[in-house]
Image 1 (cartoon, rainbow, N blue to C red):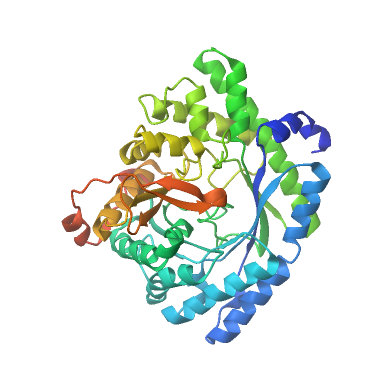
Image 2 (spheres, rainbow, N blue to C red):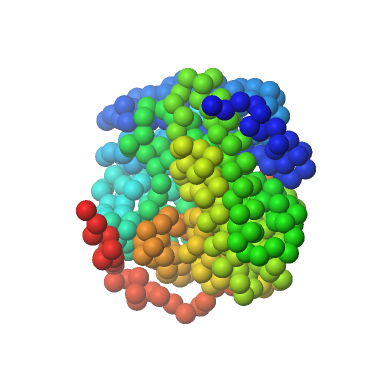
Length: 452
């Protein structure tokens, strides 16, 4: 049983080392909101979200004040909208996006996720319409986040969907170019997407989830970095043990907050996502953790090995602290959201190719990476296909969230503010994969997917 004594030793982590609860996310099923009349569907969606999540902000404030634990975001995730919209046109889907944004504003939450589709094996006509609507939906809304799952280890890789997403990302960038192409920061392409992820932009409420659920995402890169510094020049086994013990303490804080939020909102507790989610604040960086381990600069030789140690130790410590760990759980490496990653990218130590290698051993994938605005849709598709292949081949979640910075080139920067931070434009290979992408079809599932 949890009580306040479980978190007393974390007081210094909260005060001095940037420990926080990154998000309380309420997942809400919209399956019962489906229908043929778009206006009635929108009304049902608005009423369901604002009814179920009416107290999520106030409850988060209560817990934050009572326990002294910072809670950075209050969010909502919903059923993938393609499953609710059915036969609707792209214009109808945009109406749903506006409804989601209006509900988010009414609740006072930071983001709402679920404007997306699961198309790892094929696309229905409704799913095609939703995907075509994404650029306009993200351009017209402020808090709506979108994700599209284009591959899984069981189904293989839907290259037709990837081909479409290259165009969608470029359209989104163009429609939001006056604001540093921020629409792309709210759009992510997945392989093996988890159904209980509390982190945006990929959060949605899976079809196997209950009517509503509370998921919590923890953070704490600064805590881990400090623990490694205190450990001194120990060997790598001892270093891994240090990270594991620290992750345990961080996750216990998340478990406490999740249990309290669940009780006060009278909504079942789902999972704690024990990911190390960085921020642009100095000292709250995954890159600095790796450098504290002994790397001269994140991105240099040894980076992938150090990240593998970190990710594994975080998972081992976290699963001992909570009976229900889920979501993505590990270490995030979003370039724009991590002060150390930003520094490494600026000086050239961290390249797109090195980031791709690092994603084989961490959570998610190529995340919040700004690239030149004149790249082709085919090049973006190639980047997505490469990253998604890592996930499919290794039976893990991978994703791509890239920002083609329209009108900008290598050496320039984009700035989003807040947790989204800023990012230097990173160089991209100019050798085209266009003919390969144009073949279309599906890359078959790997042989090890045949497990029954």
